Image (spheres, rainbow, N blue to C red):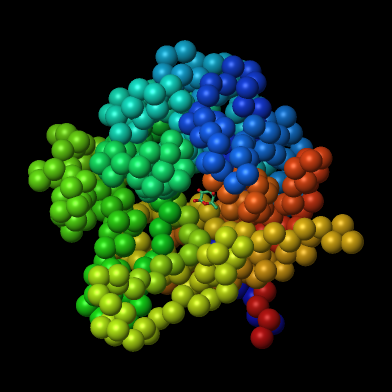
Length: 456
Ligand code: FCB
């Protein structure tokens, strides 16, 4: 048996998002969000599931914080529902909405758990969508006002802030593919949305810093390492394109390098952008987006192996890489080395002062057995291997400050509804009973010892 130790003070935690767990969507003055509208539109989510009740966390947050304390979590990453705080996106502040988050933060601090707050985890107030949504510059301005209100209220107690969660998913799934709220399929709108998401981040950072001195402020991207399936030029092009589309499109402007020229050229050729390129970019925008942050949050789930669709398979070189690892119930390949790859790449190429894994986890449907326990050995193994990959990255000099497991509770998994269970705690959605799964009990030991045990 060997043991690997994590750095002193490593922030072990778990992550959640407001719409996925809170429920209580009609209570205490909360306004409608794009996810309420989307989930209530027939055909948009698995079997019409909605977040109306979800984990009922809004009413049970004290019990949930007690659960976190029992697991020994050092930090908890949650998101704030914009329509609870500002029901129409701008203007009037809804005090009961803010009270909820004050209560949650106080409960966490009382339990010795450091709160990490995400301002935007996809639940845009519907009123702002009706006025144009993220493709409109005014939404970026509204976000700054919202960030100001929240950081003034909580800035004395919350010391870790994330502006946005996964702007790639918001723009691509929400405005290009239409698989997420608001369900729009318009490439030009998606590109404008991506710019305004990043711009709103850049504008909000100094405001949050002013209201919450001594805090760490950053943004979270979902990054996936991509590799060509063979050494052919065609597969290399396919890989470069996907990497540009999902990774560099967001990393490059955040670290002062403008939008990647190859991807801009692609969008011009496809007609998604006019010949002049990103016309929504105004003077000063790129400087604002490249504001220095304290950390970059990375959400990692799987990798991409790219095979060209431009040439017939028979003309392509034989595959040398196969995405043939075991699959989770979400059909994502289990590929722990990808976490090491993406952490070291971001560290060496972009050099954020600090990194956090703000999400990593797996969907497995294991249910309580006759003994009343949930033996989710595959999730436990998944986490163990990914923690090891993070450890190797730390050994190579990556300044990784913490790791947030996705997710605390089984919850509303967006378009998949309740069909995918990512929690380390089982939730019975009929009774709202919670049962920590084997992975949670194992994680408790990892946190307590700040180390992993390796069996040879
Ligand atoms: C991420 C989201 C999170 C959850 C996981 C599975 O993209 O940030 O809310 O849905 O995927």
